[in-house]
Image 1 (tube, rainbow, N blue to C red):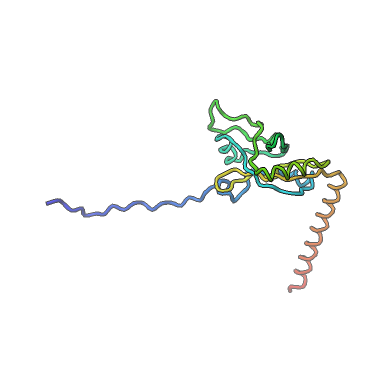
Image 2: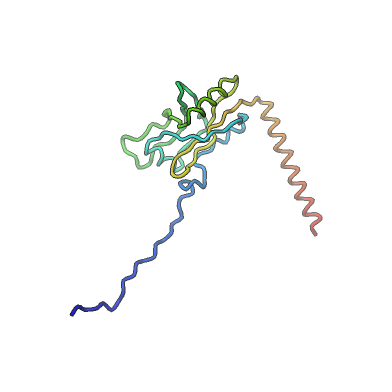
Length: 178
């Protein structure tokens, strides 16, 4: 007759570790803050980026920079130039080049729109942010027109006036709330 066990075996409860907000898509991997200061951002496109494995891992670590990056359309294909993605910390000798040209993944209709819009004088393609969507790296590409110095000053004046108006409204609400 087989012996019966007197104690039951229970498994330890699974710990629900919160996922990294960058990998989950809740936070942007890289943002080009200078883009809205130096350009009028006219039209935006979401496009995929053809990357190597170590590049994706570096972006997850937050080692991407779009400050001097720009896009071009050549031979019916879109490319991202000067986007800096730092080397992967656990990479080996086959790690990626930081400033290599990367292909942007767009539909042909979107590429035709980009060609038409960038042929206008003063218009260019500027990446505004890199982020994850469903585990894939996406790039927001904006058609941009360069700002002159007086445009930048005007934008700063408007921003300052809005800030003062908001503070005056908040001050008056606090004054009469008693």
